[in-house]
Length: 303
Image (cartoon, rainbow, N blue to C red; front, side, top):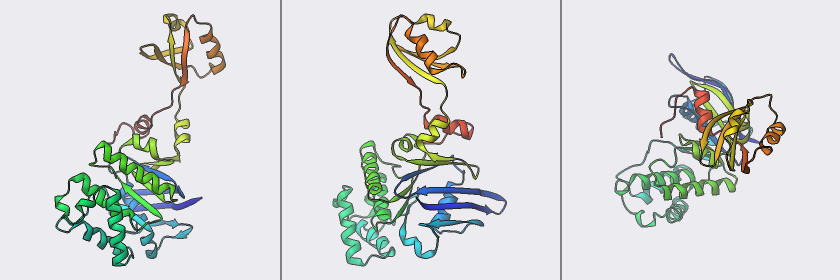
């Protein structure tokens, strides 16, 4: 069941068509990757979902109802650019932002301290934001986004500036929010994170939707007839099998392409006749980075 639906949305800024008739369907309780190169239109889509501005045409539905101003409290948005007040104490800042989302002062401060402890920042609560490292500031911004328990979370590069240990902590918190039934839009250039965390994804380029599906279906769609064979023994004579084109060699293994007309059963028969001991034989699953490059045309995202 879709919790968020973006239906045929278009947005233009003067002569620039930022979003061109894009439709998205984000399932409830899922982590949904919103991908694309810089300038693709992702931020414009996010700002329409958060009500910062309205689409020129199309509509956005939240939980089956057209998005309205009253829904803003149900959304938590963590932008890529940090928007914290540097000369304000951390606890005061989080409390203030939570009160804007409808919590009273006592509840907001209690929740803020609980989250600071959870994220390992309890000793920094009464320090100024400017005293914090970039990674700590990122964690404070995350707390300010999620602590009021919104139904929809939009996280734009949430682990930016974090070391590997704290990035893992952030990822675990995001997965915990999913377990609680939260719906999460995850926008990042780190495609390995999308592969590890996302249930589905959409790829945007030049304002247009290129693909939207579950992660397994996307990989299946772009799967090629590539196989990896690991073995012991000499397999030089495999080069004489006309249906096979070796694309890469590794210690104790090869990667090869197979002609479309050559069935897997026939391939296995050919391999079983070779004087080698097969230790692994698998179809190569395309990496999301390779799919991204193929669809976008070489515009590799910056890390």
